[in-house]
Image (cartoon, rainbow, N blue to C red; front, top):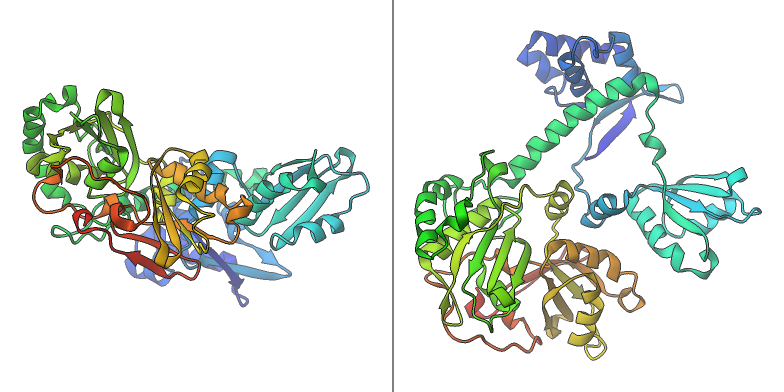
Length: 478
């Protein structure tokens, strides 16, 4: 989300707020359109103040002060810029480490200066402000982006010159709100949060009119939601036929109803003892996975999709057409409701995150062997499959959990062997459309050497220049 600031050219904030106030209070649609459709920052702040309780409502003069931003004698105009999704690595850093663009430096030498810190740390990126608190020997360096600050926090502790010093995130000075403005800021934040929730719900809903023509930004394939709901009675019947009896009352829909109340986790039972995680992923189709939990000793697995509509699609197709692996028809049911997708993960998925990690620009496949990739990437979580596309100088590392893939993309770049390689998210082959006819494989599982795209299905990754690298998998996985 981007804000654009520019000079008002002499027009006062007071008159602008007055225009919007009149438009919103009268409900005049023409007037609202003239002032920007009521979707600009000033209108959101005004609407939030109008909807607040009487005791919490700010006087008009204080409200004007919230949007009157003078800079060198020139009032600034506030508006929306081009949409900018949060990178998955940044979202994860914020969620796990409370990352900000401010880097805290502790245990500084008494003779170090702000100029020296600026000269040293500007190699990472542009710096907004450097401040040293001399009596505490600590410093704060504000960069222009969180991603730059994340590089600093991850890199400095590995450098000898910074050994023994504390490096962490500090509070962004832009997050400071004067006491006189806190009530208005809270009201604006509440209104913005409601808007974001509505946008996220719309993004997670499958919008399409027929099978195989999904336009959801998250799931490349999902059946029409109304069709899925209409078929749920039949699905529950199939679950009973498979011996699950609806998984002890577990259902695709919770009491909450709607998209937020839908279950994203599907249960698979009666799995052959020799079936591997790779075999399961080769058989699962219909949507991007959040995780796959395979309990091989119990012959069961739980598949959690990103999109609840994708879980419904997979459930319906597997129930009606059957899902067979290694000459065993699997039992299909609903697992424990996974709840809505965590907001930080939803942002990462919106930015293209999957459980598949693309490793490009590989020149020496002897140095980057299957064992090395499994060893290095295995530090971040369980790996389902590593496969190579040597003619494209790349490899793909598939995790069983999308969160581990996100951590791997951020962490692997700190390893010297990977600094010259291109690391990005690839395409989850489980997101390919279901095959026609019975699902899965009736024969014993096929062996895989891991040295080609034979078992990964169609793969893709976006490189630094935005190029889409796509390859086709074996016919059986399409």
